[in-house]
Image (cartoon, rainbow, N blue to C red; front, top):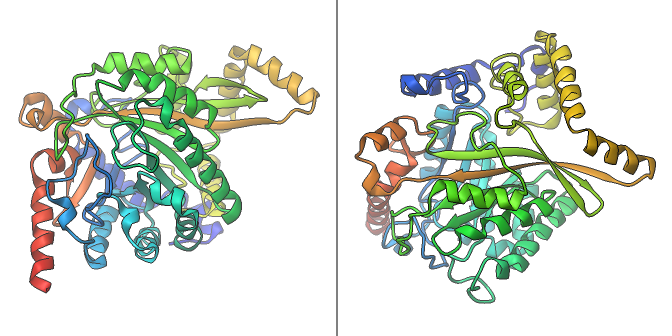
Length: 444
């Protein structure tokens, strides 16, 4: 719910934010509550829906849906609404929620718009997850969600594990670049036509055949960082109706391929987000100068300066700050309010920027030269993420149980939030599907 700017300025921290963060921190195992843990400090985690549209018109070799999913119809809106209400209680205001299931864009646009609009109305930040084919066929579908539903985040999944895409199934990831290019242009066009913000992430499943192509995909993503601000890789897990049983890529090999694409080494654990074995991620600024693109890593491996500064930010004046699901004026007022309450940041932030600027002096000289020649510069935030979901065989191990206890990505089931790996690997998704189909049959 939007609040007046004056209130956001003088009340920059909401009680609900604090409560959600405290619950998230207390839920973690004791050994995960380190100074580098962001859960309970800058985030309460994230969540996803299920059953919204359990069907899919693709037949991918890696699929976490349960067998028989295409027999289900879309669940009633009231059921989706209850899920979103549970997520809101868990995450608090500004919580990130993925609107996903099977392929949610198989819904009529007014039905998916209703789900997005409700999520926004209760101060969640919804992201529609899709293979993107309907968006590419019907650009007006996406524009409707943005202009009428308030959608400002999408995740578009494109890779060679998919079967059923227009134009046939490509043999390698390079052959999919035209699809990626079309998706990137769609994001730009939708922003321009709607005059609204739209943040996009590019999702990729990795298996034995394509994991070395992560380098190519990262290079593509850096070139298109103005459209896609994140590329998110998920090594295939043996759950659901996945036919691809090649989930043996080593995480170090995957990250090496990512670094090859970046053209540099990258810190894959700048801080903790739940359990360290679940996620790898690195954050950058992409500075575009003509055809040249330079990467500035936000938190470098081994940098005491970077670690000191972001600990001060996360555990000090900006702890818990988010602009998710907020109008710009309110988000800006809350940020200013935080800074006014912590005047030391007025010194520490310029100090950090200056210190980093001196370290990037070559880029600084190129930037000054471009400005003197009146050349346009663009700076875009960009991140690379790897989410390591567990095979079902891992759930009942010591490592698996610790990871589940530390899980930061959960789904609502009967009013409770359960780890996504439990939902997919312990047959809970199949149980929920069976209950939905039974309910539909009873109503006929």
